Image (tube, rainbow, N blue to C red; front, side, top):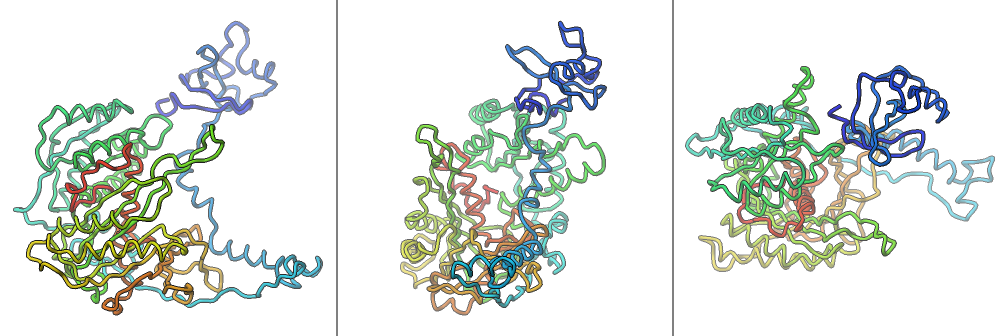
Length: 594
């Protein structure tokens, strides 16, 4: 009853929508009379609706809101939910895609209609009839399997066999932080009023998991403060009142135990809460009790699922605080200190405008720039991350002219971390083939200017030598897919260099290999590469950074800097002010947007 009250359901016999008011479990269509008619609901549906119920004795009945707010009762068998079950929604990618084998067989079948003579009984094929010929072969390329880079989690190397998912190993990681350098976070727990009885136990579990990792940042046995919240304005309003009337110490972390309103998988107050906290520079972490109720585990399976989720939450909290939860070795040829820049632009979904009769952009686009510093090839010297980020709202659909924003972000990062770099790699997403030259000519000089001005870095020379720079465009939305000659998927980490563009050196990496769909590679276009970096393999560097995204304990399609830029831009897009008030300087060294 708690799950379905206030949900909207559809009556299958007339397709009308109703809101559930109650679910009487002691009544069935045969036992519940229709008020004023002297017949049961089973008889009413048979006589008035001409519907013979299959289960007239099945309980419960569904009480819904009818005309003039009067209650009416519907048999359970004639109503259905208005959206897919969350578990079904999660499996949609498995349904919507095709496995490599199915795709291979479909291509072979289509070729029968396109090749000369393949359809002998129907005139020799469609294209030949139009005077068009089709080669009876596919493009054959060589595929090199890139080895798993060296991944170290708290001193232990991830074995080759677990290179697809090392979350179980990170859950046991001990970071052996120096006790004299441990930072105690002052945690403010925000909980939905419906989980008042369980928020303390959930906080204790999360705090214990973080303490188990023995990292630089720790949660106390009790939270610094507690805020009870409700839905929507009762959620962000409660937080604003608390922070507006409480004197807060340093190192505040907000743990928000949220339960979205009925029928919604995500909390609609998420963007407003994140916007308010980001403006003050407060780190925060949401735990969605709609996904799983961590206060009520019905059996061992439920408890295991809760432990897995909260273990990921603990790891994400450490990442947000600045802990490097695992280390990925990059090619030794990369000159250090190195600056990795990731750039992406988020475009809000287009919505239908009834006045103009067409789909229009809902709000501004948001550009996000991530600047990551790497000083050493030794994991022991990189226990904390050095990441700086900035966002910029811009006209809807505007993808280019990011030079000034990138200059500002790189300059602020060098100043924040006091570093004079020896190399720079820019990973740029969202640029089509026709725009590569124009975009690179705008953005490369802007970044060079920031790199060549180390006067703001303590101990640096007044004027630095030119920092070698590489500018690589990452293209995700491409139609190219690779299969083996037998029609199977190529392995994760497959590198293809045989297909080249007309102007720039190009390579493809198959970063993931899902079991239920055909993997789609990413095309990397080398728009610029300075001679001092010729000795660095861009494909090996990209593949190593595909394992460095702290939000996923496995390889992803994109190098971590550009994937983090995508995540930050998406978060800013959910904020009412498009992220314009995020306190980026206070978040230096923190991955607050995960």
